[in-house]
Length: 104
Image (cartoon, rainbow, N blue to C red):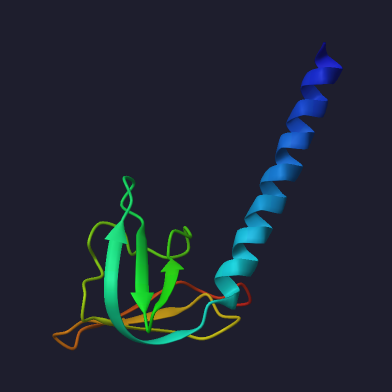
């Protein structure tokens, strides 16, 4: 019985790591620079934005854009292969979110 439990825990950990890697790869591929045309928040407060017709899920824990922090008309900039997003609010306030893995 204990062996089954250990196998289950190991398998769950492998699946979690794979899932995290898969989503991180998706988020790293994002590249956008423009005004937010639309924004919606899920029940947990995680943002999904639309810029230049493209939809982007910003639910990675590396970014804190929860609970109406982004509004229509704000500008967002993200470069491919970076986890850093620059949010420029309509009033000119600049917010930097995220960090790249190689930063300490």
